[in-house]
Length: 327
Ligand SMILES: Nc1ncnc2c1ncn2[C@@H]1O[C@H](COP(=O)(O)OP(=O)(O)O)[C@@H](O)[C@H]1O
Ligand SMILES: O=C(O)C[C@@H](O)[C@H](O)C(=O)COP(=O)(O)O
Image 1 (cartoon, rainbow, N blue to C red):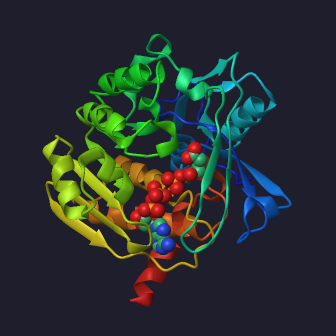
Image 2: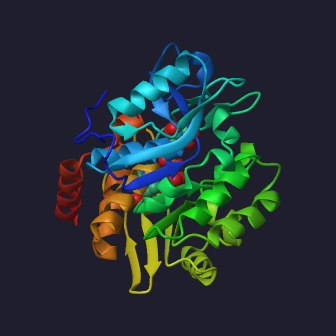
């Protein structure tokens, strides 16, 4: 496991608080084969907002996640992994009734990475309640990061909306449009909840499938326009191997992908998210923020794991130099 660059002390103010899905990723040690033929698996901390917190911590940011795990050995593992990555676990509760989720995937580079979620009978992270939320801690963060999955069931839906509301004083409230169809009855069910959450967001970030569910179009420019029309200051449309488009009041940034030989595209979005958080916290110009996020996404696309693969700032710098040399 990678060592964190800085650890959070009990009294330190948090820079970023994420909220939502957490669990164990069990990823195949053999790539290019379907699950029935996989012989062994590697175990990692997983869950998109957990990965984003880890990614931010890799840049030295003081990060925490609001979530729940089961009262089981995988819950113990998840807490230990967060601590080892330098992510504060003070807001990680325990659900006595449900197991810590596990997630399998298949790895078919360059562009096919099916996910298999085991979140039955219910994921503990969907049992976070509004009453348990430390609204003061959310309000005191510089960045609050919520995801659409948190809206798929109660009591997490009400808790996520309450946290988004509590995050109003934060300089940056980010909604990750994170669309996992298996958690919903239909895109039509999700749309109104997503738009309600977007009303609290300064920043929206999503891939093409995700913006289509949120605002009904896949065209990146039109999607960004519609997201900004809903009040979002910065709209970011990730396009996997096609790069990224970002639009804010200062204009538009569109970047091609950084060069990489893809191993596993899963986690690229979370790497992108961690670097986005870091850039927002640093107050960097939009073009620099997005270039660094684009490079971080490419780096993780070139690695098997998600959380354990998050890059350091020096690795992002190196990838940016590699991309410049390739042009
Ligand atoms: N094959 C790739 N080559 C280069 N960069 C990539 C590749 N896949 C992803 N990225 C980078 O990571 C970002 C997030 O990846 P994407 O797959 O769009 O998000 P998500 O994982 O959320 O679906 C992309 O916008 C891009 O910057
Ligand atoms: O999202 C999950 O719950 C599992 C993650 O740990 C997983 O690795 C993943 O899918 C990452 O998401 P992405 O960054 O959006 O590709």
